[in-house]
Length: 217
Ligand code: DX5
Ligand code: ZN
Image (tube, rainbow, N blue to C red; front, side, top):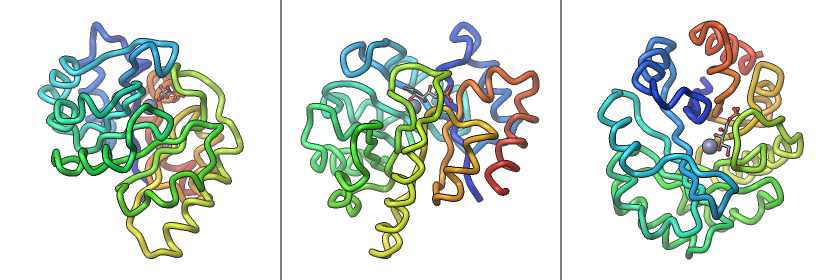
């Protein structure tokens, strides 16, 4: 079954505890935390202290997405709060070494590719990665539209992972809703990140159900 990792970027940050409670009640599998430094992406969100607070406030595992220039400097601190830590292929680090650093710090290691980066760029990192995150929008903001070329990138990764008999998971992030979830699901995605589709819905539990149903179609 496809798992859902809600992005709290669209939540009201003054009431994060309420948001976490509603997400737990809705039965999601994890919490997607978008960390932005204002340099790797043109936006600034939250960092280590807020990740610590979220980790302490929920029983759900954290799926931390680092959109920062030098992730290698902060891996241990984020890994202490997270089940999985995602770094960007396009960031200024030795990606293979940083994935190893994440595993050594006790978290699942993931690498993300922006819309312009081909899936093949990470093929030789698949042994080092527990997950590949395919960005289906330009990272930086919630509420954007799904870029259709993400679907073929997911499919290409699925084929390569299966061909090599690996267990690497595939996650998609950006513009996921009832209309786009079936595209990513058919291409073989394992985890859907969804922010605005859940936080802007009148009933979050219903929105989670609808997303699961759409992905199962
Ligand atoms: C974008 C973030 C996403 C985003 C998802 O940089 O990585 O997690 O907030 O939001 P929606 O689902 O609204 O596209
Ligand atoms: Zn994200």
